[in-house]
Image (cartoon, rainbow, N blue to C red):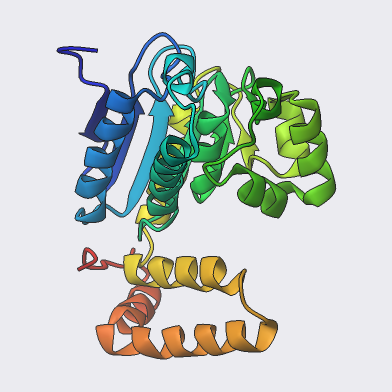
Length: 261
């Protein structure tokens, strides 16, 4: 949409960044919107922010792909170019070094749900609806949805959701593990920011190491995962955060950790 800022990045505090999708009415994934999101990712990847919150402007998180764009995908070459781009984008979201929280307001379907699942933690508003309805339109979730949903909720529930193309409400999403918390307020952003603040108060280097352990460990056997954990623990020691944490404990004060570099 000409002249419109499709993605807004703002500082909630010096340590927390909010990324707001604003492509009304449903924050659909047009080519221009994806390009704006990719540009936002470049900024986040270089940021020293200790936490990022992603949310949608208006009544929706994101209803996913743009059907006008889908109509142009008629051959395998075009399909490959499209799916590699959107899957690569979601992988980059998942690979951000700092914690990323999705504040799911309203609808998160298709690519919107896939974006939420690429985040580390998901907080939903009570009116949220989440799902992967792609089979209804003759395709499958191609931006990581089949893989991330099954890892979050288990293969049986993931298949049920994708086979039926039916979204789940916030209460169900919480019960099956698709989201971690449901806010009392219609807008889940305040709860997401509260969580982000708690994360930002801890050692950013240690949190980044935890993220590596969990994300990389999911694709490893236990022995390899334990080795990864051990090596990252050792790597943290020369940075001095453990010494600062211990000093803060004995001084009965909040630790003062440096920004990540």
